[in-house]
Image (cartoon, rainbow, N blue to C red; front, side):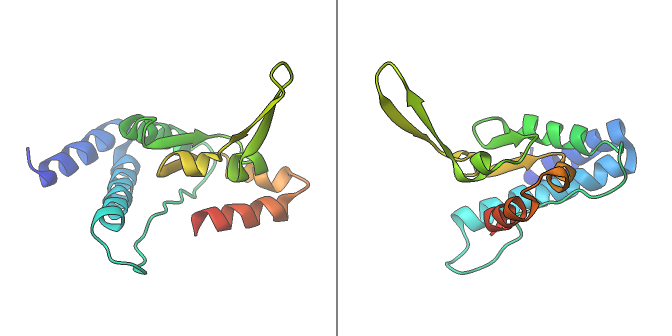
Amino acid sequence: MDRREVFDEICNAFEQKYSWLGEQFAEEFLYTVATYILHRYIAGEGERIRSHLLLYWRYGWLKSSLLYKAYMLLGNEYCEFMTDITKAALRGSVEHDAHSKQVTFVPPKVLRAPFIIATELGAITAKSNQDDVNQLLLAMLE
């Protein structure tokens, strides 16, 4: 099976399950994955290639379901899934073991995998430190 056939099969599967919206999502998702591969293995220094995908439409229109399917396709080796964006998730955190008195740095999710799927970005607006988290998110995307 060549690359075009794989692309078409994935898009058709999403279209059958989620209609035209699923097909559009699959196309954009696959383009994002392809540009990551180009950037990682082919592109030269300083070139900017699209590496983000934002789903923005009405509440209840399958965004989280589609993103979860993308996570399943990528697997946890290449993708981290977040439902709540916190400073610790974007910056990392420190864990302290009281018994061994050892301190361990837990790297942020954005450093553990090339793809991060974050759902419920609307929850940021409800947080008191909304500006801080928004700035962290923008820095992560860069």
